[in-house]
Image (tube, rainbow, N blue to C red; front, side, top):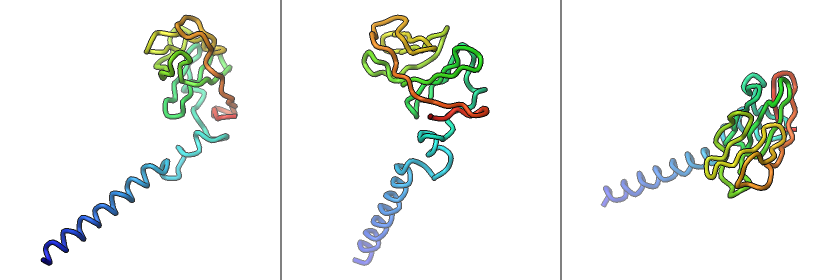
Length: 135
């Protein structure tokens, strides 16, 4: 009988540890730099990370940041306006959706080729020094 009680206690303790681990994972991080990145003022990227004439997708933030011309940075939602797929790359001056090959202009998010008919929504950003953050 004491063996059953011990197993019950061990199982309960294991479940409590698992619950604490899952709570820590689901809480959005460890309170470090990642948590502030999606909030206004948190650094999303560095200017050196964004190539001129190209961009970088921040999938975890739902953003794509582009640099159409040297020193000019733009940000857009990374959710395609056609069917909501996440864009997958930036190539030849276009933000590309892998689902149906919609292409959006890196300078203003407008549709270069469909099937999407609406532009990618812009997101406000600011550049201070070499840090890009939500604005």
